Image (cartoon, rainbow, N blue to C red):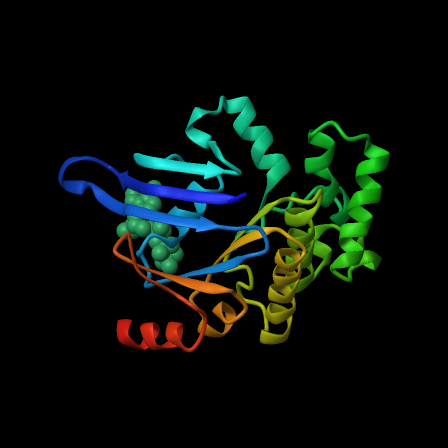
Length: 238
Ligand SMILES: Nc1ncnc2c1ncn2[C@@H]1O[C@H](COP(=O)(O)OP(=O)(O)OP(=O)(O)O)[C@@H](O)[C@H]1O
């Protein structure tokens, strides 16, 4: 089943002369096992697309479907449950809770979903092990490097077998080696069956994706295989 579908999605901000058309009719579909990179110049609508895909924002036109469900039809409570259970987010602002340890941060969505603390901690410990930082489980975010925090954020995004993983420049300011390991984790999650959407400015990062969608002024201007087509488009845009 298609995990994520945007059908003729529009998003405007503001009104009257100040109205901005962040997205002007975008249609995409992402299948299980597929990692799709979204590229485009600053202001082209990439973050808007990701926020709509994750149900963090609603479209002003068109519809977003997650696993066949139109998310505009969901109650607030159902949408919150869908976000917690099915969707993992790795955003540049990591949103790790500073007063919780690494393992508590990863376990939190599971506990919120009703899993016992004991079981949630066991699942979280496995997720931290998967991203090779099990020895940091009891550290607080400010006791970890940026790369280590990023791994915690990835573990939290995929814990509990989330089927849709959304990443907005997940490598942030990381050095290239650490950044690559974050992308490798995302790729591995998709290879294990999740659908992924990766917003990036970096053509090398887009090289981890199965295909690249290129946005300009809120429209998909090309959807192609990964490199070298994406590099050509980037050069054409600059
Ligand atoms: N809350 C908002 N209010 C008003 N305008 C907004 C809002 N959010 C986004 N926009 C506008 O919508 C357009 C698309 O923004 P968006 O952040 O999606 O672009 P982007 O491609 O992610 O850019 P960047 O690469 O710089 O992060 C821009 O013109 C932006 O100024």
